[in-house]
Image 1: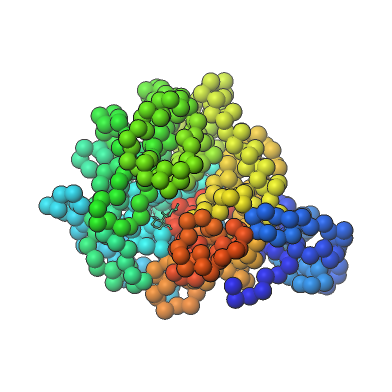
Image 2 (image 1 turned 90 degrees about the vertical axis):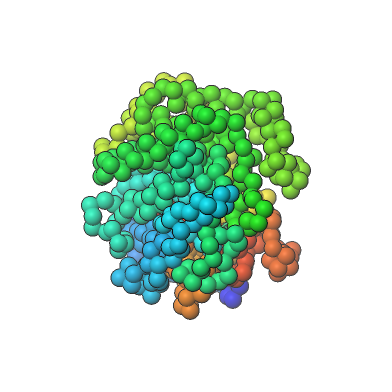
Length: 580
Ligand code: 9MR
Ligand code: ZN
């Protein structure tokens, strides 16, 4: 790091009036709060620090309590720091995180009037070739570059869109600003305009038999060049169950959300989803995606597709009301709790074998983990979908425009999912309480893209709060947004363009090759990773505690890449707090 971390850690972009204002201190000197006129208005004495396992720091959280809008100076004798309190504290960061996806658009030019200095010419416009059958060529334009690389992957893309659509359904006031993207002003909220860019691409990734390709990438990652200079051939790579089911789910969800804006588009998505489900019915036996020989782009492999299939069934039920999908969801949910069955199904599964070699301690989990919202486990999205159908979705869908199947609050399956969910949300809250920085991540879980674990837990706690009204959950979720914006062991804001000490060298090809000092704004870094690291990273971070295993260095994809599905759960969380 190029700077000395302060002994006062804050959300660098600002705190919202009416919500808790937590900071962390690493010194037990008394802390004073002065207003803009220099008048001391609060002081905190008798500060007791405690050891935090994840960071190795002695630290404590302080809630500054009620503060009207304004600028304040915090001082603890050792350090001084300014914070801002304002009504619109989360507005610009929410908007930037959504616009961050616009900057990932593929197959088109980014025009100066929308992209400013980050403009670039159209990229990846040549027809792609089917990896397995080289005689099949297809022009598949659109979609978002997945991350720091230029690959496009169906499963991760579907999850990203789902986070955005649920953010819009649940917190429309928090994410409906105009963002100066090409579609702005067309009468559709820009978060939906942006999500449609990916949905249109997902539709093109469907084969005639209803299945979906796993990904559209080159054989290997490009060097650090601008996307328009990346001319290596692209391939449509192998159909997979997980990609197909994630696509079905998000298209069924999209069909509900876009019906009020564009009936044709909604209809197209629903029929694609139904054709996809038809393929699954004809090919019920799960086959894991195995990276073909010669392909070295993102794997996104999974040993099991129960979660994707569950999510797809829930969304199809919500959209069509056809009981057959509810039956399927209930059955999958039940099967996932049947350990013997899963063991049998998993026998000889090559991805599972590969995984066990990496992690011999891996134990097959009992049941779907409904607090998971990431690409590898989408169970939480299925649960969220189911919750959104209960009692006309009160807390989950504020738009009268969106018609969905309604389920009564006495529905037994709802009760079952909810019970499982509350176990997980309690665990998430416990993590926050145990962490010195209030971070929903234990010391042993700083994995590649730890921001996803943290934001996934924040989503879980927000959903709990929506179900129960328990403000403790809401406030614990808020702390995860604070984490992203600087309240952390590194004293860094992980969102490009935000905060006085912010990530500057993300592993992101355009940011690393456009000759502009500031990286493309509104992208969130994956953050500390103490697990599967590159040798270089390991060497540089030797001996550091997990929450500090981070390098703001371009080559460190393992700690400092950006990814669309890390932006999107953060959009959900930020939109929530921006909407209150
Ligand atoms: O997000 C993925 C993370 O969970 C994995 O541990 C990691 C290593 O396999 O890959 C991450 O995904 C990357 C993908 O494979 C290719 N595009 C960039 C993604 C973010 O690093
Ligand atoms: Zn591109």
